[in-house]
Length: 327
Ligand SMILES: Cc1ncc(COP(=O)(O)O)c(C=O)c1O
Image (cartoon, protein in one colour):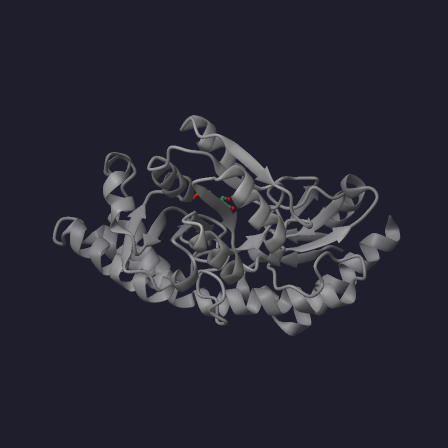
């Protein structure tokens, strides 16, 4: 018998809010809903300006459209869209070597001095697996006038305020698609204190507008972000402690990565033993979006928050341990 879990879905309150928004399409103004949601996001990310867009990739594209020179991205554990969109925008990309996804300060310092990039793009959690030292990286970038862009799709609502905090990111972008921390199925946003970035990307922003139903969904779902993120981090920490082959034992994350010799085989067994409504909860690595090590990832971030409670997490641990033994 396999362990049956639930895949992450928007909360009932969010679905209700989206239904209400669609029923009142004739009677309410699009801009009011969008303004209201943008204003709310400013309080979560500590930035003055927020612009909602139709996806995380659109947010990345809008920011990249304001750049002319080369950009730095992590050599693993980033988001594959960084390179793809930079290519589309004709921006040169330099990969910065990392320690299994984590950018080291001395390496960044050397790369900033040698390559003189215009911007650094990184995700708050390398591969969703481990937290980047965002504040320290920001201070280095800020000191050298390099724009730091944090993709905080996996970290909105950080209770520790270390990630997705505009006090230490020039620009935050996030996807609110599925299955992200703000999980609405669609949409994304850009936030910054530098209004010029939004002004300079106006033409792109006009072509990637959010719809008001998604905006109404984000307005509601973002309230749940701190609880969802906290529960996912806690469950992941608990799991990391149980596996001595877990990567980045000491760092917060929302995906459990286990170093194994044969990730395909192990992944196959875990997929057979743990189901989540036939949706993806296992990632086979090497994969740039997670880690380039030989590993299998268990995607806690994709699970319904109710499956992250103590008793269930223990069952997941037990099932993964058995799967590793079977292999
Ligand atoms: C870290 C990260 N950034 C950006 C994106 C792209 O978001 P969207 O699908 O909303 O374009 C994703 C999608 O999986 C992601 O994981």
